[in-house]
Image 1: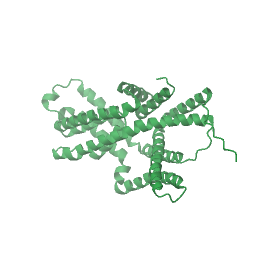
Image 2: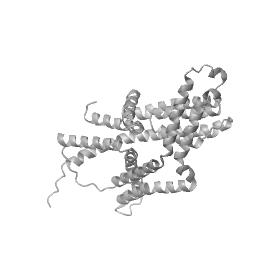
Image 3: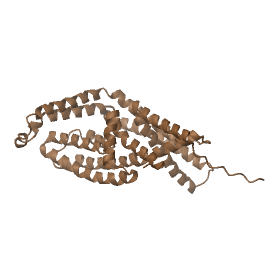
Image 4: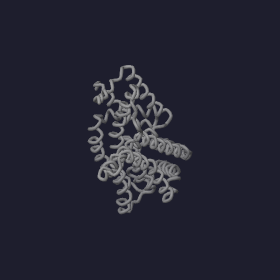
Length: 349
């Protein structure tokens, strides 16, 4: 028998194919931002990475008992099934155990914003007389403007039930797409498909480095905040209202680097001020302490992996927020990290 010829490695794509892949990738990302599909995109990446990680773990278990030759494929199918079914199981459990909190989440955040608006308006009454005397004469007008803004946002949030459910639906569909993409059987790649696979691989690497690191940072921050609000403050006799909402908001805001921490600090400090000035000082001191530690972790985890400076991240986030709104704040670190990886791959930076 003649010796089988080795399959030649795929040729490098031409400049036209590369340009087409860049345009398709950039157009897809712009479409995601334009149509509000960012939760779906993030969940596509999350579902893909989770399925791959579970597949590797199940494959290692199958190697210990290699009874079936199709064990790797079975591991892929089992991992995809877990990723697709687990969110539904968690949602069912949440609706069973905490139905009022899950369904009425927009209403609870509306009440929190109204509560903050009242706290801002009553700032002079909350502060000691000696401190209130140092407020400028125009402070009352500023308080009215801030309270009006919070009240307007609360009114808009009251109508956000449909958007809340739509976001969950987009996220779950994205999770399904990511899980199915992770277990697809690859065929013989064409030049454009190969170039697009390279773009997607770089984007997935940026997602893994930025979002996964930020997730653990937000989880660490939320754990410390929950201990402070649920144990430390009640122990001092200064329990804060809306504690479950504040803990959830801490995690969600923590997913947005830098700016989310600042917003979280302001909200928790204002809620502490509604209890007493001492509670506000305690909240502010604690938040400054843990967020200083978080900046060190952020610089070590995110900055060392992506070579992004704080000034770069802030600049990109402010521009993205001005163009795309709040979704731009979430997408900016991910998209900018992907851009830097593309430029580094072409040896331009």
